[in-house]
Image (cartoon, rainbow, N blue to C red):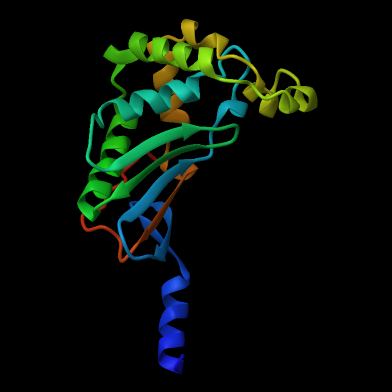
Length: 192
């Protein structure tokens, strides 16, 4: 490989730190469809056993308005983080991330009872790992071993408060793999 091609390849593979709407963003050059994600440092482990399901409920509510799409998107709530991710064309990725942020700012509370029922259905099919339970008990990272018992008692104000406290600009990082940052990309979230 000639020196110019080697340097171009090294530059393309490099991870670049930037910022989008006040949120730290990691960009890596990649060909093909754009892949991106918005990650929040909040998960199941950040609540008590009685309220551990609130983060997962926020994730479901934030995704509801995305509807059906030709591109791939989803969300995931883990012990220590919540991740909204997408793969598609630049405009689809930008629209998805903007839609998630808009939903987090104004969760569709008319869907609250329906999403609670969906979480209960998911729970009935999930196998809960035992190692976190044995290591941590009914707190912190051990909560991933327990059913989401608290979901039925969550009220709209509880869910809104958690979203406005934890799904904020200061608790997020954005990652993007593509040929460039998508045009019109906006991830406006409240400070916090």
